[in-house]
Amino acid sequence: MIILLSGDGKFLLEGKSLDTALESGRQLFSLLREDRIQEFSEALDELHSFVKQKGQPVEIYHNADIIVPPVKCDPRTIQSIMGFQKTP
Image (cartoon, rainbow, N blue to C red; front, top):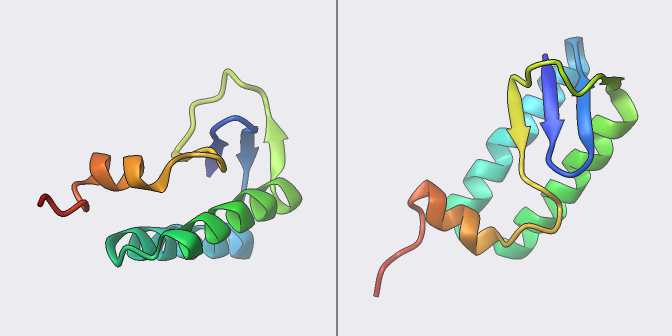
């Protein structure tokens, strides 16, 4: 599966490495939903590092199956996009 790390390129992950990355994605989703912002930012950084370490870089013209937000993204913006922010 090809994963686009926004700002860092595209990487091919397979097997157990792919399973680990997918589990990390589910964890990121839960952290945002639970408003655990600092933990989300740390886990996102770890996911980027993991994919860059375990993945094989692929040419940019390959379609991505998964898109991961940039490490320096604003978690509150991601929450808003996903409908997790509570309105006052």
